[in-house]
Each structure stands twice: as structure tokens, then as C-alpha cells.
Length: 160
Image (cartoon, rainbow, N blue to C red):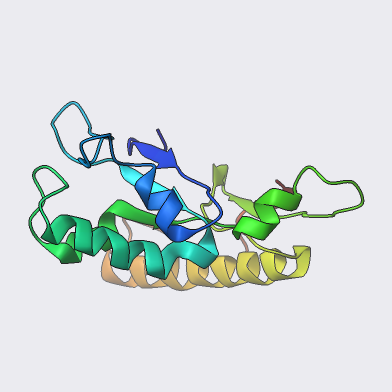
């Protein structure tokens, strides 16, 4: 479970295999929450589009309980951060797969970056947004939320 969302990871060598793994021997979707609704299914990044199409067809044929709209497939299938090949190579020697995340004001952001520089650039963008938002907030509520232009939000870039 991630942020109160139930997620099943399905990393198979093809999008059809990744989606097929979500269905029982009767062909019905098997990963349901206690409410009977489908959990999200994370597939490799390079399989996402095809997996959504396959799930749309499964919904059309009534194989996903409580779901009748094929457009819901994009809410059930979740794009992973890595391709199938990257996942396969994670355990191999001499393969560097460093990824970076930002902790902004003590909160770990969801975004994952391929390079430290990309993460740093985005963190600086977030600082800019913070200042813009704080300034607008102060203007819309004078006296309630004083803006300190000298305050610099704290951020850290971590390797994941």
C-alpha cells in the first residue's frame, strides 16, 4: 500500500503477461480491495500503454468486477518508474541505476529523477513556486500570513 492506495506490482516480460497475472483461473480480476474495487496494478514503464489497452478489453468483456467503463483502465494500470529491462538489470554487476528524490520541507516528494542535476533543477523550481505562492498568499490575506522573502525552504536530494 502506498499513500493509502493498494498497489500490486506485475513486472513480467510482456504487457500481456503482466496484465494476465492479475486474473484468476476463471479469467476474473483477482486483486480487489475490501470494498470489492480493483487495486492499482503497476507495470513496467515500457509496457504501460499496451497494458492499459489490454485492461480496457478485459473491462469491456466484464472481467473486472464493479467496473464497466473501459476508460477506468488508466486508473487501474499504473506506470512504473523503470522499464522491464532496467528491472532485469538491477541485480547485475557493474550496472549503475542511481535514481534521485527530493525531500522538500521534510516531505519526500513522489517524483524520481535520473540524475542529481535534474533533481536539483526541480528542487530550485519548487523553491521558486514556494516564494511565488507565499507572496500571493500574503497579498490575498494581509497580516494573516506574513511573507519573508529571505526565508529559503529546506530541501535535500537523496539517492534511492
